Image (cartoon, rainbow, N blue to C red; front, side, top):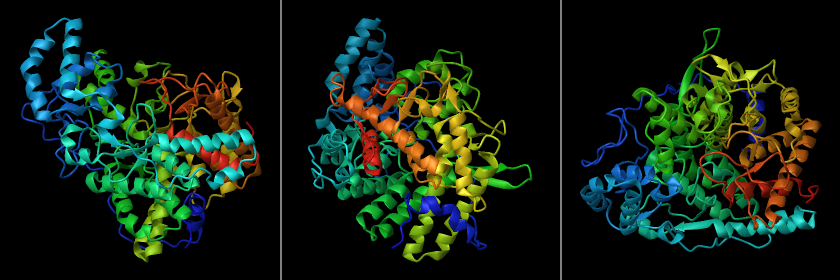
Length: 620
């Protein structure tokens, strides 16, 4: 069997088109449908956020499930618990298990709620804490999970033999050990009594990111799986992918994460890439037939719910995809932060609703939050003030469309494998159309890079973001474009960028995700595992020698930063979700709505990938 993934077809997609003669096939309608369906709210629910029939909350209970969103997604108890800061982290309350049926808890709160709300702040806080203690269990692993050790874990996976440096080899072995610490299996009690939990039941065990992220996260799992596959944990990866099939079957897409309050937004669509990686490593070709219906169903979600039409200067119509959550109410996991933002700045009602859709769409992107989603209108605002400028739904992102290019090529290859040549031809045609649209709207010949496109202004956001270079990773270039020439231009662009006198590629801790220092976590000075890995692997997979060497140089810096942090006695063997590029001492990144988290699934996976690829040269 030919391979169709990152190591082959994602680098060859533009070559496939050179010899491709498209057939006249019917094109599926790609216009985004207006979504008017909202949740059937409980009879006793009185919205605590101003709104009417246009209110769209975050929950979409699984088909056949009795999970009640009245505690975890909206309602008076959620509102009072969160704005009163019963817990320092808003996510804590919505991750708790209820001791009784949700309707009973809400009935009790209806009885005592008015009295509690009328108390002064200190007494109100004490009474709320008492009520919550009586009716919900503290967040703990035991509430949702049972003990589980991966059965396919082994002490000495083969990638370790590629690591020449003894210190790094020992560190790689410790990273492999972390999979056991981060492994989770959801208790059958969640399946039997879903109304008592916010977590979504999955049939198979999986690996969590770590810290406050106690459930699965969609795009995190791409890099977690890359690490697991190098650790030869094929069954764990297969089970994770099957969990995602369950999500697609239930919701039509994969939610942002494994809680019911995430079920009206997704994350970057990596499922097809996960399947391809699994098949390549395991040799399990039969899995393609099982996977294909789910992969195509998920693709249809992005095609029908997230795709827009753009008209170029010649009058030709093109289709590209954006992040576009329709949720316009505060996120339960960040309820207080959202509520205060939309109520303390004098916004009109419609402006509040619109801003929340941009906030939840930024969450769908995985880049929550960044000056990137201001669409070039960033004016130096920091922290929460930046969020008032978000226009995420107005932006056509480079990375999302690059990932969908990869998905289209993989789906073409999978359909070839099962003998569905008509469907294969359709996906190749979709790929050809997308890369051409990216060329028209996202590529900037003068600057030698891709940029996000701002639809309302019909212009590009000509600022550096690591996502600008995602096409180098997916090799999503039109048939007539020479890949090496294109990548030389992108390398020149990378070398031209700087922050306060330091070149972008010369920071000691790696490549930052942006050059705007906003206090948000997806901005300077943070380097994240996924953006670092896509840049490094994209450069290394180039035919340009200078890019291959730059890839090693950046891999050395990223690994050094992770290793230094891990071995720093102040951090106690910690792997962080993000790092500060201003130093290679392993200082964790900062900014955003919560403290930096450790664990950390995708960082572990990327570190293992880099050890596997560059292990013969890397030094501690």
